[in-house]
Image (cartoon, rainbow, N blue to C red):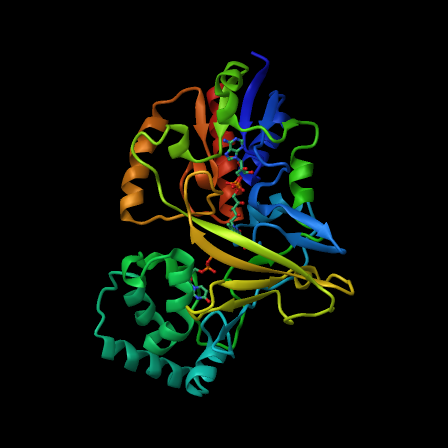
Length: 369
Ligand code: FAD
Ligand code: UDP
């Protein structure tokens, strides 16, 4: 065999795995179907602004080991994500905190805010939330649910909040303090100079073939490596034998504007259902980039169909059951490993992806002894 590992996909998972394996002397080949490395964290410098080509990416984690790991490959700034929500022309702070409660109800103290939420929760008569709508009302009450959550969530996921699992909304903090930090994590920031440098450093000295889809020449790729790490869609790998898993697609509409500041913030969400996009990103605010121009991206969630880029796995009950069948097939494999968001069919943030990749590396090292 020419290679110890063939790595399908040059996203964060594949690149961390390749880096660690290369470090211990394993010969790796990375193949990537896109015309660039990095998967969805890819950034491109345009007009002196690092543009997040596949949507806003903010690194955040509470895991010191992972924070130190990623800091080997870039210096991070102290960016704190504090998005705003625009609903019918009015602006509200996110995540749900005392600023939001003041803007909605004019309440000024935590006790007043708590009482308001309790009052609305009681009216809705929710004991154990069974879906996202009930979970949201239980957390922040019906008014905020209708202004800041319902429209956004239904656009984002393409189905009613009553048909979505409660855990999706539990990602967001609810705070009785005047704190607009979107995340609760200990560490947060943007790599100064963009994310692509991280991937380039991870893949330094490793052979990479771009514009190469694994499925186009599967037999050839299978024949040149002892083992394969696959970070594409697991259902596609098994030729959809148990049916297709569901994903959410995205369209990105990027525009360069001849002004230096368009919206005054990196992220503004549009929470009403009548506006088809979920958010507008203004890239220069991630790094305070100096430029006479500004670049913005509108993000439109779309129905995913085979052949399109799959951005979000939809981890509801049905898809989880189908995925578990594929997972049972995967467990029987000895030559092929699965990893990443699409290989594990799990919505993971970057820190989780690094952690999972390092766990797989350790497993492989043990098997090698
Ligand atoms: P990917 O980045 O999807 O990489 C997989 C790679 O495999 C791709 O390059 C793909 O082209 C390639 N590939 C697939 N199939 C084949 C094939 N058959 N042959 C060859 N190549 C193939 N995380 C955060 O921590 N913070 C954020 O703020 C954040 N924001 C996000 C915003 C959006 C819009 C999205 C979609 C995700 C966001 N994430 C965020 C999650 C983050 O993007 C992922 O955790 C991370 O990029 C996943 O890395 P991966 O390697 O698993 O997958
Ligand atoms: N959400 C919302 N309104 C907002 C932002 C988020 O209702 O303005 C909900 C939505 O259901 C989303 C979930 O909160 O799917 C989690 O938000 P997060 O920002 O973590 O989503 P991501 O884009 O990272 O998947």
